[in-house]
Length: 300
Image (cartoon, rainbow, N blue to C red; front, side, top):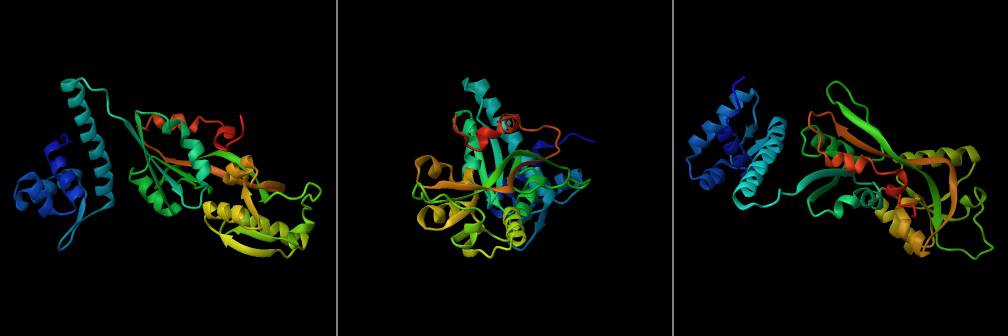
């Protein structure tokens, strides 16, 4: 295979960033036809189309998005090399791109990323979305890591690597009660208004099974698919919320909320999902070596 033509790659990168042949040609001070020819030559060398050409725009294919992620790294490294050799500057900051399922606890995400947030040489790119959206980005290496509360299984086509990094019991929490009024589980489940995760949540499914087995019909005040909103509703209402305590760690520490009880045999699992690749970002090791207690916000 002939070596990659970096001149062609730079032209592709410009078109991908601008989203238009016209704007990229103006930026590079070349004709549109010359620019189009260079991109087509790169596509021929790679053996795959990088763009779907439309009337007024260039939409990247999956191969194009993958090529762009590598091009970004290559040209960032080139700029770093010039800065180090010509100006004696220290190397540019490392970048780590993390996606998190939109319903995942924000506290858990912050706890996990905290060591990197304190480093001057690290830039974090944090994104949220559905698990399927994030897996699509991970597949083409526009993400380095996904944080999820659901496990995925790798296949020959999608070689996901999924490891559980934390597991926490699920609790019922609410505003402080008079000292002599301890929460009576499970009897009081039918008496208090409940804030529950949405029905597609694993912990909601497990809770519903438990209630059905106990013959309990609970009072549903609200079901919420966003743990951040569930945290606010628990804090600002008289309802009882079903959550892993990491979700409300700050409120528990301040005393605004209290843990009424741990629900037996009900857990929230937290997973780190990566994709098999030859060169994994070194920063991943820093994150994934953190202890379960640290990422769940256990007091020191």
